[in-house]
Amino acid sequence: MPSVIACHTNSYGHLGGPAAIRSVRSAGLEHVEIPIRNVGFRSRRDDPPLLTTDSTLADLKDLERLLASEGVSVSSFTCQSGNPLDPANVAIMLRKLDLASHFGVQRVVADAGIADDEGQRSMIYSHLRQIGDHAARLGIVICFETHRGLCVNHREMLKTMADLAHPALRLNFDTGNILYYNEQIQGEVALAKACHLVKHLHLKDSQGRLGDWNFPALGRGGAVDFLRVYQIMRDCGFRGPYSIEIEGIGDEPDLPLEDYHARVVESVQYLRSLGYFEG
View (cartoon, one colour):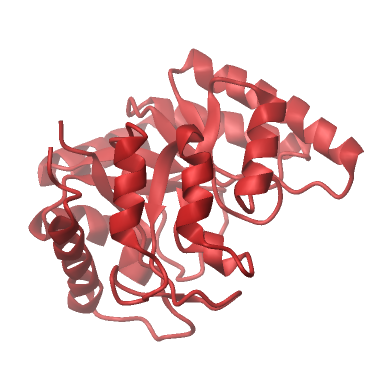
């Protein structure tokens, strides 16, 4: 069975979701990962949100129609909702899970949070279990992003997963972020140690420098061994969702659609050459 490979809509920069949905099939993909934004939030590229916490049933149906018209489906949603230490952010996350469930997805990506001490960690765990219980009722697994805090690297990931011990709380491994947030780490080694807990994976390239916002088309960064990533996940029984995420380079200006799309096309072709699209 072929792996599910999607494109995160932020790969289309300021043009965002509408451009991604209308373009990915011509790149050889049928799936997208879409962010559900906090109402009023402005992204790094200020792309128009397809869904927010204020979205209505009519908004959901509008998105359904757009997806159907382009022959594209949603493989997952990004549901960054702020540090779950704050009960208000827990409520936001529950709302986003309800919105995601309308589309029948089985995976969402979210932050595990940041704790300054063991007391805060314990509180976050309590809130995450509450969120996990709600996700489980909806048939969704929450996959924690590789961000600062409780899932910043494989050591923190493994501790957090062991402490939580919740079947609806798992990992999203981001091949670029693991290098962005950590020094002296081998991304593929980290992945191999945590792969049995990875239920969603961001395919993001990097030049491997700490804190360097340089996420080009896949295969151009040089610090991620995408063949080894595929081999590790294949041997772990993973069949997706993989999500291509091309967040661009530093403060580059907004690009025309054809330039964003060319990066996606190049990335798909590169993954195809490595066997990602084989059954």
